[in-house]
Length: 383
Image (tube, rainbow, N blue to C red):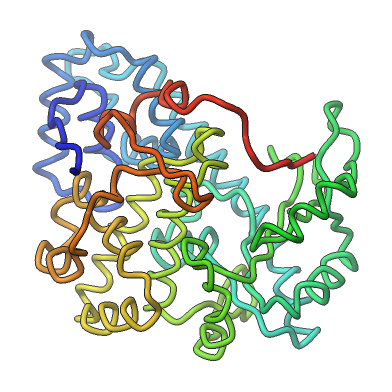
């Protein structure tokens, strides 16, 4: 039985969700302005900023506040306290992402020179092609998909650029290689390589991080069998100042959905509190708009069936529609709806330990203590 959703949200969350979009019409802005004029002093702005940061929306929300002048008031006092915080959040993220893009461009150039069969996923691709403003979406790493047989070659390319598989020491002075046992565990049990890192030490970036993956459909035990076909359909275009390869549009969307489903339900992410944030669902909503504009839903439906990831696509669409109902076509949700939707409230199934949430989705999405329900420690070593 799927847990029913409660529509009641705190006013700070309502405001956050209104501002968490790259397309906000003037009527919504005026509603925000009126609400702030009448109730701005009653809002818990500390909670608002905390949630904006937790949901990885702070740069986007900051841009919208500044762009539309929502902090200004005809009466004089600012409608939003500490509006300078939003200036730093947006412009700081813009500068940081620009620096990351410059470094990632060097990685892409090296991958091309090595003749590697690869595709870049998620962060920079979304930032440049969907958000179209380098300051709006936080980027943490560069995700690369290759076939399993090419992971060593990809690692050698990164090694030539100064990257190692390791983690930053507590003093921030050096990278410490992962222990042999951790490497062995990951090699046997994980579809992704341990992250490659290189110290940066400037522009608010401690290290550059590169993740190499050979299976983007991790909710399927046989997902790696599709990697070669995905790479055969890849396309080339401008990315991080270079000509980089990315997945075909339909595959890119399925990748987003499968990754969201995996992170939202895998014990590794749930115990770390990295399972849910609004930005992941905004990514889905924005790509849904592009699919609708291109009349590409039939191709997406067929591709999701061909690759056996209908449940992951439905999981992403169902939850994205709760936050962005106008972006996700109801007819497409219905067309992809599985016979049994009980899995929507489960986590741990990937590890063979399925459990059910007691809270409905919207409640736990904004609950900073939802991991208390899970208990236990992270089952995957990363030391």
